[in-house]
Length: 249
Length: 249
DNA sequence: CGAAGCATTGACATCAATCAAGAAATGTGG
DNA sequence: CCACATTTCTTGATTGATGTCAATGCTTCG
Image (cartoon, rainbow over all chains, first blue to last red; front, side):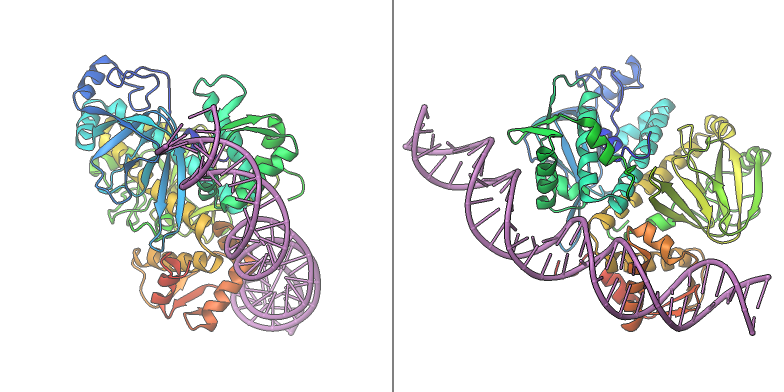
């Protein structure tokens, strides 16, 4: 992964290939990708699907980590709260991503839907059993984990060293790329996160995010279609700004 | 882990228990902790020790990831560089921590010694063989990886939401705690990182770090002993500031 | 003792946060 | 389908925290 494609990998999260999860019935489930039919049968008996509305919580920070989740439809955000109420968005997740996997007893962050969608969940204990039966599955989790770690480091680099506009540019590009990797067609992308969500992800206020987006619009780099539609008119300009290779800095 | 003990876990890194690595001969080697004598014999034939001076590189960003390293003595920093030269310190590592483990072909970051010390390295390919022979070892890497991920998220929270003084306070406390967990005695801790290193870790300039440290000194919270000695006089005050639970924010 | 590296401090500039008002989009009920 | 309420977004004015530039002082080490 290019170390500068800051948020791309975070956006990409733990998503993966194009296999079909027999139980969930949808394409491209991160968790199930490396499994053959026998493993999937094993999992199917213990997994459940749930439909959720926008803003619904998948799990809360501090919850006992009983389940591991796969987001099968929709977009979610991962949040972490400080005792004084300050909040940060740790990352965004898309259809196909795995959520809430941890060896700790509690979830260190909460997860909420940004759109309506569905999740598929399996008991943590059941997953441990499967790890023992199918070592390949555990290997896969290790890979996902390392990839996510690399993405977190990209994000650390962005938060520590990028200006406001650089962060927003990197975010918009990574959002578009994440959707393209998920078979998105057409020039208009979804932007279900509010300015406040984006700001909490990038360590900025919502006003600063809004100003950056307005600046890009004035420069003709992007076009907005309602509150939810985003079109990248000059992607090269955004990539240039969001890649940390600007000459004067 | 307390979500607010921001940098503590990052400082703690992948360090671990108190087992003895037969090959390296030193206490508390992260990599070897879960292994019995048979596994250690297996590893010993392929691992090598190296002595390094302060500022020596252990590996560079972009290097082929042939080896996995264990820091057996000394302190190191992990750095990531942008094309325009901006640099960030991703984390610090202490004796007992594992470095450079990745399934990717290249190291995504570089590692340099801050003090003189020694490292023990094993070939990545050899480690893969061991994974197949000792599933417990792979499980251990998964645990370390998840813990490091949680630490990265703490750091993201700090970079995105903490003020300069809060970040420096959290850093000093975590540095002290990391050394205490490694059998440190006495009130004076080592601070081998320069103001510039700390600043690159916390997303601040070296001047801002210096000002924060001076402010703590003026308030009687800390005392400095030369360029390398740090004494926490009022740890509670530092913890209060660095925990994100200040009332007015 | 002197040199080199690192740290401190001050003056000033700048970027992003804050405070505040109003506009656009979305959703709701009649 | 329209009017209204709500939420989200935009923009402006101002403030404040941190960065930048520059000069000086302290530690360490040869």
